[in-house]
Length: 530
Image (cartoon, rainbow, N blue to C red; front, side):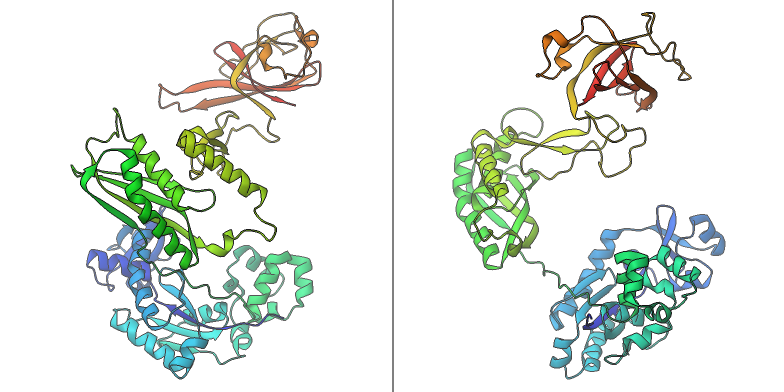
């Protein structure tokens, strides 16, 4: 049986609207709506009174409120403005977890002891928030984060709301089932006659697990007032950057790296003492003519002092010589900023020493330090419709982000699974003919001029190395099976990169499957299914 921890939730209603109103110097009494992807993301109380609701289309919202002022939703503004509130709370009570802009959580045990009671701690918080201009802020204290959030969102004017220890199940019992935050599960439970959290909590958790799985068990735990999710305090932002100024400015790589070595070692030592490691950095090169060359660097594990120096050296080497982006004058300052920090406990050496992955990483990093940043690359899967364009090589240690699109997003028209095992770097030439030996074309309507019946690999380099030369046919062989065509039309709006062709899948006489493309009256093998 899980036990919920007494939790304080601080909520400032309509924070996205408040942030925009402060930025635009508007009053919250004005009808304001924030728009995200054509829908209302948040709106002011005045707009809600006129009928504007979250999720409405812009035209529907403007029809309900003719003098509605609309602004694009800016998540960065949301977070940046709420940082002031979080910093003020951390001055009073450390250990704040930001749930979303406008809402944060704390463990109630420490503040209630320091200020004498839970209500005393809540009063100090409320006074601080009112001083920052958040007059409508609400402080809720209950068993578990879920109950405290529901308590904060209840309608009413009181700023401090407290559910006594052990009272969360009774408090949550009358809440509608939609409060669990899973719309699909809530709809299903309503169809089963369970319209409140109390009715859902009355079910045996073993029956819930058998019917709804782990997601249902998690929702059942929250509905029962036993939310055991702990508050995870954020790491307060600290200034941990390196800044080395050269007087006079330097223009040699060895001089720059030697001058920065001590600062890089101190940077890593300070992170180690704080039980942190850095997994990505940003290096800025400031020249004496006022130009700043900056670049972000990632690391497969974490940065040591030598790794930091290697990135600085590679960046300076990449900016020397002619061409766009080259240094036009000597460097007067080098600045290194940590972009991603993590707990050192996640990177400790195993009980029996380093894992094989660690040894591989150290070996590749050593080769990279000797040969240069781009000398060691690793393959990542990118987005794309073709099998070859989804393979992207990036330097070892760089962030796994490519310019070819996100591989996790849907790509209509892409080659379906299972993917071919052998993808040719350059397409191999093949011949596909009808049974009579005639050529095959595809009309604009996708109709074949003939039925594919014969197949020959004209570029024999496409065969595997284990294939015997005597087995490579000198004449077209019958096809065992074929399917297609699948038209591919890409970037039709840009004539420079537009392409249009048709894909086929065929199985030759030996039982080997091929992925073919018919492009400009020529047949090509893109990949092979081994």
